[in-house]
Image (cartoon, rainbow, N blue to C red; front, top):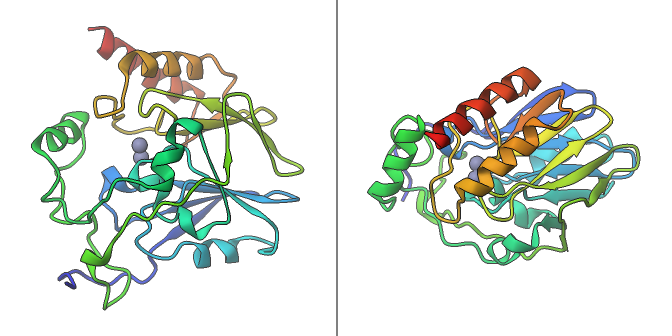
Amino acid sequence: MTADLPVDAAWYRAQQIDPRLWLITEPRVHPIFSANMHLVLGRDADLLIDSGMGIAPLRPFVDPLRPDPARPLICLSTHTHVDHIGAVHEFDTRLVHPIEADELAAPAPYSLRTDGISDAFRNLFLEAGYEPLWPLLINAVPAPDYDVDSYVLRGAPPTGMVTEGDMIDLGDWQAEVLHLPGHSPGQVGLFHHDSGALFGADAIYDGPLIYDGPGMSLPDYARTLRRLRDLPVTVVHGGHDPCFGKQRLDEIVERYLARWQA
Ligand SMILES: [Zn+2]
Ligand SMILES: [Zn+2]
């Protein structure tokens, strides 16, 4: 069924953070499920970190941002929540941590309608600090004939695995894979040692952190936050919300560690 929603054909938005880094967002998705995608341009390959909800084709939006679309493009899924793997099937090289490999290949079904979301989840999101869910996860559709009930979370088998200590190498840009469990068991982030840039996924961002749901572990999350606090970070590009610096990172970590200790 087509929903009674406005059409927003410019589904994705891109913001250039620096000459080799783009932030891609889906502003028409509810804030809880509106994740950041980061495109890092490299000499020998480009890297896309996460792939959104998969509501509109992503690859045709990403390729024009790349100086040479014929160059290999690596899609790294930081973890397998719906808002981070939606368009993963559009990419030929698909990396994920082994713990979440099965989920990437065959994710649990998802609907854009929120009436199936349990009260427990609704409360979890509300208590975390998010606005109440809308009837749909979106407040616009990407095309006039878009059928919200046609949405499927497809997933795709990974073509490679990443674990703690691996390096993602784009030729002139290397980042270390950090295993950051807590929000999900196999979540990974990336640390670019040369600049101190941390791609923190859903382990850390400047908004309500989610630590209380299925597959989540508070002790693991606390260890992950302490670890991130101790890194020589200069800037954090999180899985949601705008980027921020080391001082804000410390504030967020302290706030959550204090809350969990209480
Ligand atoms: Zn997320
Ligand atoms: Zn998540």
